[in-house]
Image 1 (spheres, rainbow, N blue to C red):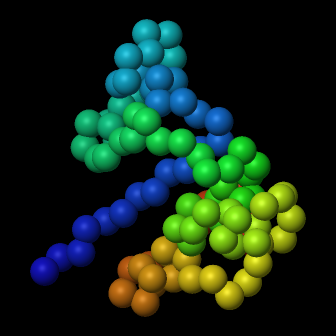
Image 2 (cartoon, rainbow, N blue to C red; image 1 turned 60 degrees about the horizontal axis):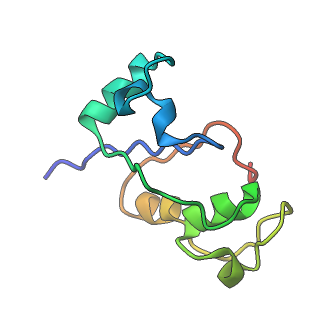
Image 3 (cartoon, helix red, strand yellow; image 1 turned 45 degrees about the horizontal axis):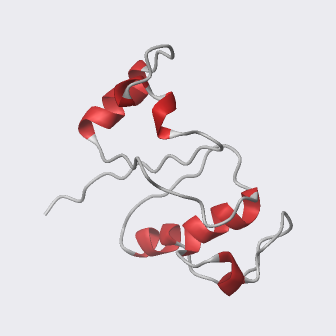
Length: 103
């Protein structure tokens, strides 16, 4: 069986309605529109934390910030498994690009 490709985009402070395909009549987003048409998009997703590093760490580990001891913009704690590690262990090649706070 062929594995599905996974593209996980995680942007800062971007509401769903800043994308043309979700009804924004002013901002033109052709690349994001194509992703919306062929992928999964969340129109009512909320961050578990208003601070950058804990929010990213929560997404990576699937755990709330108060469970990870990562509640401020400081170094991410080590020793917790991320979804990228799980994907790698199952034969996926993973890559992170952009503002990651752990590279």
